[in-house]
Length: 65
Length: 480
Image (cartoon, rainbow over all chains, first blue to last red; front, top):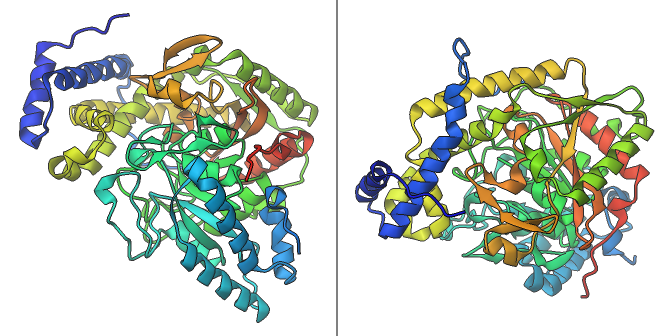
């Protein structure tokens, strides 16, 4: 399956980051990072779609015997 | 006395050392000699501390001669993953960024091994910054699997696992933030333990080699008995690690040999099942039957929000890793492999709200596991969904499952980690041990998990399974 093209917005975000941090990235590399980031955003969607209202975020693993 | 190094275990050698029938100096020399012969082929070690190991062995021998025997690890040769600080030994974490770093302190787990009298032979290879499961390292080379040198040793503690499997040490320390002890243990046919979160101090683990809230210092050993002996030495609270647990340390060896009748195990179901190869399914099914014959009651176990685990794990790891790497990314970005750099750059773009939402989901999942543990003692699942991939396939970015080549990595990370990550998210202890071999002759691993701080139960079950089967007796054929 052909890989989808990343959005222009995401490409711009990666480009800005590259400038801020001084990364030496080619246009192809910027596109690859943007694609990877959007792919992760799709993975994370399920976290935002699940009803977690009222659940306190776990601040540290509180394991008991 | 004649030493059959391929059959040597800590449990077998320790009494001989105690009785002064086996010299720690001769034992250390035997391992150093074997490392010289085999390491060029396997690349398990990235640093061999030859002189220092001999000095430590001589000191151990002197102490034992003077009736100051410290216990079962006294005079026993170990290797240490290259992201755990060892005073005076370069600790590079698989990266050129730290290639000149020589710590002036020991990681707590290393210090405890030394206090127990262990001999440190050297530092073992790992995936760059522990960010992957292959130990194909562009800077320190690829670690090869002793069972088939055309295949990976797994990772990220691949060097530690290969060293134990090839008898280049008697035990090893590794770290596991997604799979990194259990995966290579499975691929190399040895025992790998990821203890409960906080059971072993993380002090001295290189920051950025795994998300701090998912990472664990773990143990790699030739058999379950040895694994228990090593954990006994390194476990316990540590004032230098605020995340370490104050729960008392059990007597792990005492758990070995007890029967399994009446124990209830849940066969864990979930998102990883679609990637389980037929050969792994068959070995796992046979392992279940064996455990059943030993008295374990089996049932299906379903965690209601199991499918959230990959997203929780990835969101957590990306943010925690990005935070740790931020200064290096600003100053040393050229010293990352491109693939690793892309991952960290991408991670910098993870929204804070996603991280917090992941921690909400994580609490939910932890509570669901806790609810199941009210009626179950154990969870069972394969360690790796498919047989050990070739180095060539991994370099091409794919893995073969039942004759089909598929992408090895997607947004969830390496597919090989999918069965392991539930226990990094929950912090529950999990052990991997051999349960068969693929048609290609490489090991397949069984993963057993239990409630928090129940490593004693893991050792009890794993040892009973190990004694009932002969998988741990098989050895890779390595011509010297």
